[in-house]
Length: 219
Image (cartoon, rainbow, N blue to C red):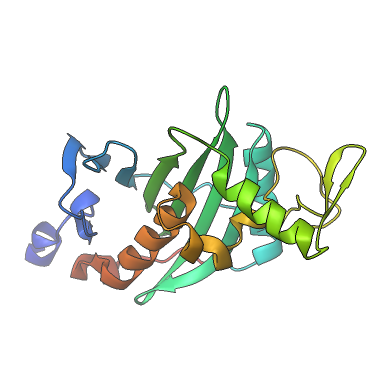
């Protein structure tokens, strides 16, 4: 009986992530959020005290379809959806793009860490600010010169594609400039920064001992 009363309750503090020295702007039982000094990127740790709505964590095609249908309803697109391992825990890595008004993109990069009755989401929101489209323009010109893309009646041909389903053509699809290989050329681009931050978090995230005792998400 004493063990039951002494057991720590699972909460938002059961997971710890680096905050990069950013300003803490929200601190509640369901969310902690930080903003970088330039106020261009938001990082949050989110805790959900109920069963995850994921259809699966093991069937990657089903998982990608699930997220694709969600993001397309907002006219967005997939950049990446993969199931990964964060320390000893299964997780889902996602990167989405959403069009801004009047121009530019916002990139949403996340780790979702599900358990049977809880879940955590580490989320980065990185919008394009100021002059937009520079990365697209430079890489499009490069690929045009290399005959990897061409201009057709409806714009660039071979430029846009869903990363996992070449027959899919809805929403705002990933373009070739958003491939990870170009991050090194555009380190200040929000997508490059979002990917870099995710990589650091993956390396430094820590899980408290009480999470070892609860049931994992096994679908």
